[in-house]
Image (cartoon, rainbow, N blue to C red; front, top):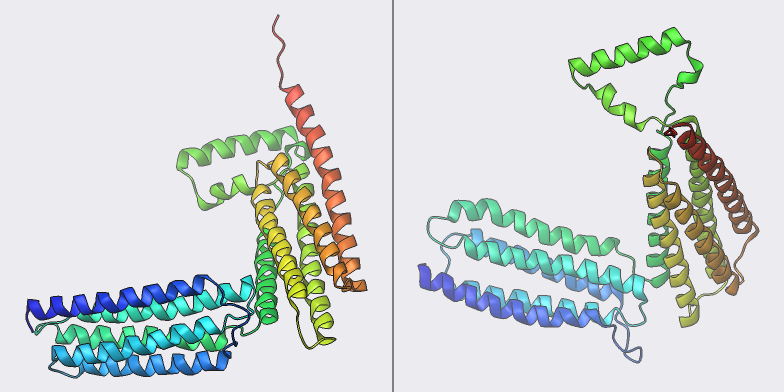
Length: 366
């Protein structure tokens, strides 16, 4: 159990890891559509075998005196099982679109990464003085393999399911932005105060600065002017409308797919395009939300609004190619366009107000 044994185990492990890495690279490319598709159930069965082999490995490491040959035999069994798991995972990608392929790739990578970590850290602890550490660490590493294998059971097994979940995820992200935007508040207007009250506020503000900043002081920078608040409210209306568009889009796709049992390649390409467009709108929602904090970035807000409008037009055209533009979806699109027009009006007023403010601050030199 000396240094030579540990170095031997490291060399053996590196050889196995190189083989696994080469096989895993296969998942970067989809298999030919002429090949027979492996069912996702077969992938799950192989993942169960990987976890069982990880459990055996854990028992070997925590079972007391460790012989190098015993560890090497267990290592070989483990990585042979992992190799088989990779091959069936690759076979399950037959006919998979970009979204499903990406999900499969990420899920399989978790199993590979947790397996590599199990063996790397177990061998790093190899030695007569490390048995206590092995008994504490190795079970946690085996648990990580179990979590990665269990996550496969929750992964989508079809293109439509993968795309549907991705659309839902965009909706969740947009909803988070909407919740954050609704927390924006308008600051007090000095024009509404009497001169004495305004003077008292200035004195109070200066006094509080002398005492140091407080959490309330830090929040002052987040307060919006009346013009900014109107822009924010229009943006909130847009984001709310986008949520309804996404909801109706999912509903339209679901209704459409119920009419047909199979999703051909052309329809799959359209569904992938709809997802890409929806994700593009999600990115612009993030941009729009970030621009609403003072001082508001009017050019960036306009750009985000224009891109949302463009994505929406393309989305409607894509869904129309599937004859899936339901009445609910079209109404949601029209509502969103009306909200975008209202924002454009508010931005115009905001620009005029901003220009007027700048002109008032101009001092003419003699």
